[in-house]
Length: 260
Image (cartoon, rainbow, N blue to C red; front, side, top):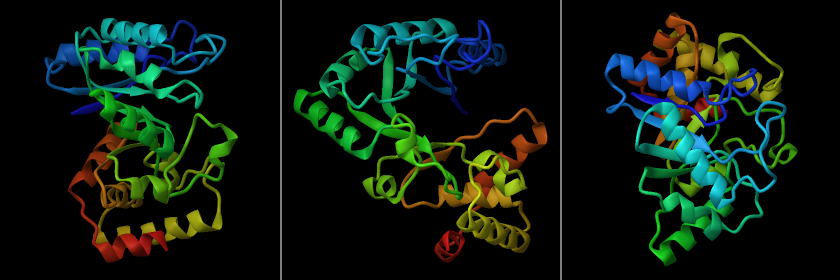
């Protein structure tokens, strides 16, 4: 019953900015579950030109509030139960960023692709001012480790041991590693370490009577902190496969073995 979207989603299509929120709101309303579903959306994203042009100061208070208002309008709601800032510019003072997030239209606050250091800095400021801080972190995370480095784009990060040790609940995007454990490989995960993990996932899947993708999702749910793996699909069978991982529990030994 959790759906992840964003203010900017579908902006890569002409006139697509906001289309994800509008369509999600329409479908959930049609199903009669818009008020009970947990919709997580995100604002505060840098430019994705040519269709999503933003100022350099994309975490300014005025723009954050504009994003909140537009997300509410596009989803057709007055309250956003979980609201993430999509990126961190690493420059704007955290107090300036947090102040507009105290808006009464927002429930839990999350930081997407923020470093542990900046989240801690923000939460320290929130504690001293009696504000809400970040209760969740959203980051790319799967059993496979991407071959690109976080420093390649400082506004995009992937799961490391640092986030696990930090202990803030995680929502993990690209949780299936773009189909890597089903045999697909975009090149983003090609490494000896990942290939060995995929083989171990296949072996364990055969032993447990499930799929390697389900093993990979169960691995994330077995980390020593609250996690919510996120996935997307346009295939009903794949949807059912991913949902089936919710009932799969791995032992501590299996988790350790998968990591290698």
